[in-house]
Image (cartoon, rainbow, N blue to C red; front, side):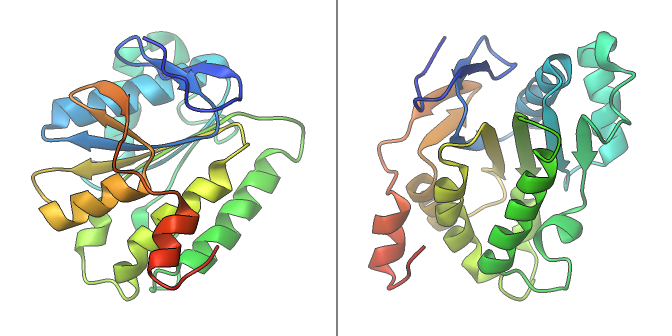
Length: 213
C-alpha cells in the first residue's frame, strides 16, 4: 500500500507492504513488543538492503537485541549490522540529552551536524527511529519534547530522511499521545500507516504556544 506523504521520491518502509515518500515524520504507536519490532526490524532491514543510513536509539531493548532481530528478519544484511557506514546505534542519553538536559534547540543543531556529515561524501537516504520511552524519566527539559517533535517536521521537510518516533501506548498517558498526534503528520498503528487528521503544522502548533521555528 502506497501513501503519498511528500513530493520526494517514493520509498519502501520495509513492513506490511507499505511505502511512502522521503521527507516524512511518523509516529509509530504500539502496545506489544511484536508490534514495535515489526516496525523497527522491517524499517532498518530494508534500509540496510538499500544501503541507506540507519539511526536507531533503543530503550526497551538493547542494540544487540535489535541487531539479532535484524539478522533473523533479513539474513543477507547480517554483515552490515555492525558497520556504522550503514547503521548507527545510540543510547537515548547520547542522542537526546548528552549533557544531561534535553533541549530542542540543541537537538536541531545536532541533527544538522549529523545530516551534513551523512551527506559529506554524496547524497544519502536516512532512516531514523527511536523508542521514546526515555521521555518518561525525570530528565531536565523533557517537558519540551513536543516542541522538538513539532520542529522536527520543518527539519525533515525536503530531505531524503524518514523519522519514526515510537510511542508505547501502554506507558504514555492519553494527554501525551494526543500531543503526539498533533506533532506527527502520519501515524503507524496496528502496522498500518495513515495520514493523521489531528496534525498541526509547526507554525500553528508552536504559534499557539508563543514559539517559533
